[in-house]
Length: 176
Image (cartoon, rainbow, N blue to C red):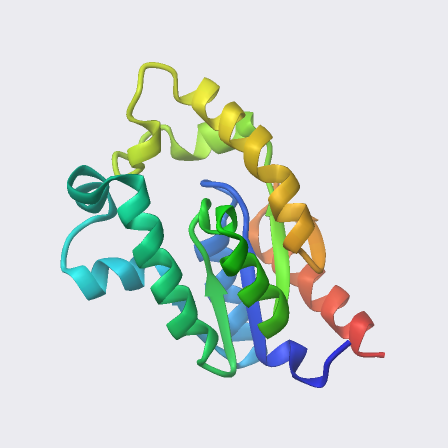
């Protein structure tokens, strides 16, 4: 385990797993800065994620996501919440693994659906059957999340603060 592991944490996981909420609370508990890669992309471009998908397609969005991840990877003392699809590119997975502690916030598709169904800002879920889409994305991405993760934490039906407490316990156990 490398010494700098607790000064950089990447949160990976599907939409609705709580990456932003948990990330903010975790950063605050550890005295680190919090960054959300999707938010950063929106700040950089001045438009919503949905607009980027409309104009540049998923491929264009993934390119922007990789650039933002590289920039965020160079910030020390931070918790970075990543987009659900950030693990699709091998270079993103390598970057996160080599640069910090990666925590997979696990959440099953049914719960993701409950948490995202009123959110219009989810371009991948705009079809007729969002639950089927979430299930398909989960099947594709779960192995990638597991591959890149240093630890896996279940967030299903748990309040954010309970998840944060578990992460803090696991991090301190790894220090010893």
